[in-house]
Length: 336
Ligand code: GDD
Image (cartoon, rainbow, N blue to C red; front, side, top):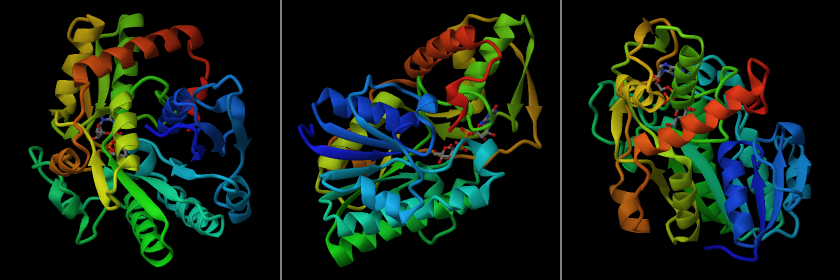
């Protein structure tokens, strides 16, 4: 585990970045944490254990400033969300290319030793995700390139930018393709939430308000693999410390349909079975997506540990308490 290093985490105010900072602090690293959001909207607090900046890393001079005297950089920053956000904000999503590019240039100038880029399953070729029961996506399935429009193109292009900075300038890079990460301290309303949080929220609210029906985007038969945040952080840190510099899936082996995930959340909430209003005109994304984990098992000797039902229980309990605290007020988790 990395210890006593000077580490810059960009996107530290977000979901994965917030959990990463917490883990790195436990191991006595010195953290410089950056996010575009004002500090009061960061998803986690660190009791001033960090240098923090609220600044826009699309600007190269900001990248230069915060990456001075740093050993390692984790780029967890991008303008993103679940399908509801990325399908309707393609230009916004693609501008995150500026963060990665300018940060890499600054890292080269400031002689950073190692750089992590958080990529996504959205980088994969869409034609391999047209059926409900698909084989897990292997890392080679990103090419020929036909990723998710907007957000996926940004991720694929940025992966390649990392690769060329390594080849041409010798910066060590590590690249994870995350498969729908979920858990506590993530966005659960406001439009950027992904399916696990959105469906927990809908079921919590149905229970509170004694409702019998929830809205579900699509027909509920679409499939995904979801990874709990603690597994994501462990996989990320193992990858960072490995010698492997090509993109690697960080995902779980449990492929479920959205209907199956709703069944699991209904069990957790102990609500009676809800009616499902399938909304076919809402953003649906690909028909089926899951992670093939052969490569990650081979190069990192790592596999996910937390079963979906256990991860959803922790997520549901956290959200239930947040929703009770905030009621219908906007919480900081709505700002991504
Ligand atoms: N967000 C959301 N909200 N999705 C819902 C809902 C709902 O209330 N009801 C059903 N769904 C369905 C969506 O229509 C989609 O088919 C599926 O659940 C998964 O949706 P998301 O979790 O929003 O996104 P995704 O899995 O298609 O993509 C996400 O994960 C990628 C990594 O695997 C996105 O967050 C991407 O940004 C990310 O890269």
